[in-house]
Image (cartoon, rainbow, N blue to C red):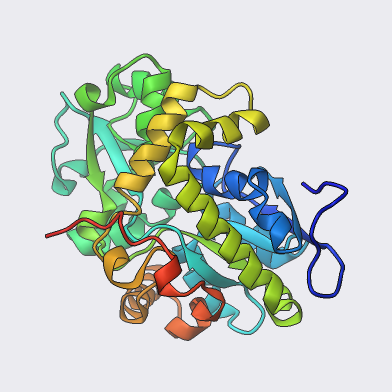
Length: 335
């Protein structure tokens, strides 16, 4: 949001930016909100308006349909869209996750210990969940027959799904590792004791997760605004790492009903898992590896039965990134 003395861009005009998120306001989005609250957007001449979304996967077609300039969406869904619409579909410009965040969470005391144990099981997923949409890729990577797995769509929250799974209604839940963990905390349970995860990162290492995306028109017509947006998000990420409590306070200002403990755990888990891949130490948070994008694109087009494998340059455009020396690399796991 702006103040009366907001610094405008080089042309003296404040650039309005419509930003579609992946979910309701929650912990992992804190870098975006700190970029606003700490006036990093303002100093770039931007006024950013956030809209809550439904899932990382859902954000991609919403952005492609118009009405928004920026979205926080699933890179894998973008690859799928690029296969059929390379010319007008959005561009990923900031890879937030350098490891896949997706999982099938199962009862720690149940019979599912590895992917092969999913045969004949009934799982549950939100209708737009990105992890469920990647089930064909997961099955190819693990040798499973997708027809052997039954998935029930449900609009219940994970905090309701987890206890029901433990009672035997389902035997697995699709989602983000840290989203399911946080909602398990909200359900009054210890995720380390009641859950086991079949993490996609172990079976699908070529796949990315969430990325900041922009429309082609926004990138072409206002490239400096895109650079300013990413510069501000980069600073917001640094702020969130330096002070997680302030980060969650920024979320709570927008969503006073959040479970602060669970969302703090969700933010810290995201920093420690989805953003701590060794790739970050080499190319920094925000960038993506072209060979890895290409490998993911080949797998996704095969799994989805698509005719065309998009090039990495069609999916991800790094020209708007802050220099590597200004970006975060310290989250990377060290050998």
